Length: 525
Image 1 (cartoon, rainbow, N blue to C red):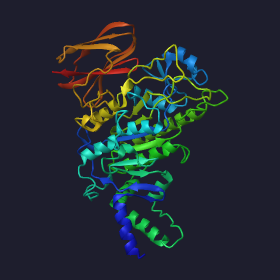
Image 2: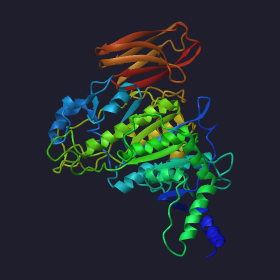
Image 3: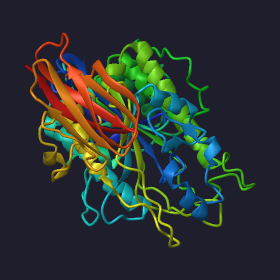
Image 4: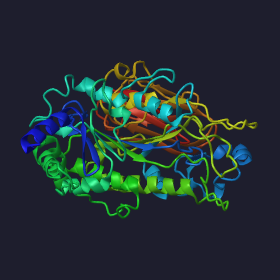
């Protein structure tokens, strides 16, 4: 075959399908910039969402530990429950703690960089890995099959007509990048994949360093090597990725050594590309190994060691280094991350030092832009337990998606993507939904009078008692006044919010009771 003919047919195929470069399946889906659509409260820089999949079904009970449920938990998972004395304690709550392998993440939580959403799942839980993952990726009901993803539909709505006219000099960047796995269903639109996949961080570095994969011996070896080189050099898409990689330089010294923590390797690439100027708004990373039917803990019986502890240590170290990198780069105000898993695990342990497929589990959203604390109540462990009992859902995972779409990406009607309305949760400091109200009314009652106010407003708070803080935030989520902070007994308490030198405008009263956060709008006249 002549080289010209070979190139013609190969490039024509590549224009509509994925191809491989040094083991990296790449989909040619460069898109326009999110410069206007994803502005950060008028800041022209783009917002970025980093999704971290904990593949296999993470055991939420041993990750974000409900300390007030220890009596019953000790009955049903005595061979793997973390001893209470070893649980990492968290500021602002007496009833939750972290797995002892998550010390870096504990620091992030105590520094106000983590929002925890409790008991996340969906109705009519499916216990198949593949089906449940599809439900999470597509945002479908459990009894409905959708062949495209929630993020893909969102990106498709933002960019009608894709891929016609892409890439261009003005819009050279990919819309989404998947690291650590083949293209996720979450990034698939109704007709086209909306991003690119890099399955191997080592291959990524070879690519951005202009290493061309040697072609195999054979009649078409020279042509194959040539097409790889031409594709790498000619595609505007690759130019934008390589250009960002060349410009971006990681700043943090906290990353583990290369190839010692696969998630950290992925997040290091994400930080490099963001710093390098890539306008990609969505990244997906993956950490495998959470299907802990056996040897979740060390078979010797030490619950502090084993597969789950190693995974949570990797997760914690990787996110901590990534957040440190973003801060040192000066871009941590426009990047947030979220962990998710296709389901949780059973309440009780099995006979193999593990747990089986369950339902709901906690979910972490992290970054400078989140409201720190806990959304929702601790799961309730019954006194009597069936062999396969698990935790019921409190928060539908699609409510988190709706919140991200509305409060982070500024989409006015998330239901246009999700197919139905879901509540908006108080995850982000930057509150784009003025009507959003207290999310956990059962935990405490809150009233502000007068509202609007001129000189002062009285905050009435009825609670079961505990650690309480009341803060006033401006429209950007910045704390402008701490009204009260300390321990208060059960009952109704009144605190006075003084106007002081506050200018006229809209503010938000953020109440934290034992880690549960509620927000109400208040107006200074």
